[in-house]
Length: 141
Image 1: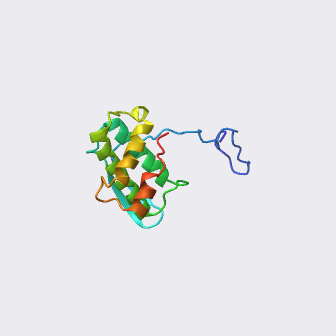
Image 2: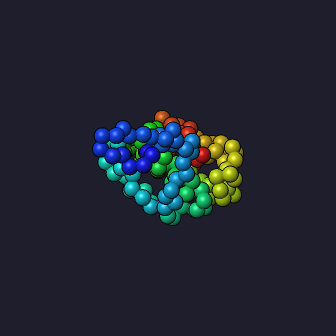
Image 3: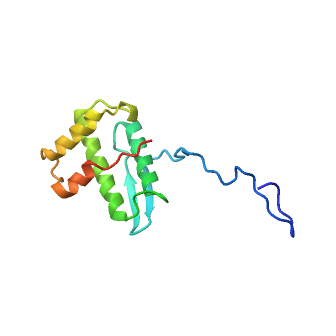
């Protein structure tokens, strides 16, 4: 807005006032936070024990963006499913990958994790549910 409006005068906005940046960076780098889901209540997220830390920060930001307004995750149960899938993915990466940052992740890491799930490497995996989790989109940009 240009200046403070006075009583009886019209309010004017600059052309850039309503434009959001194409990709606003995540201002919160914490690994322990709460997500207020649109449906179902609050989800407590704690990724402080997840290593490597740069990947944990990227995944935390992705989860925050996906569950935010306009994101693809709205229900508490869906957010928890994604969080648990992330935790299982990190457990796999610790044993089978050398990736330390999102840029280090290779297609072989993702494909290897899917093969790991299909081979029964994860006790919590069940075919109909796990297939959806294994193919879920990683929004790390």
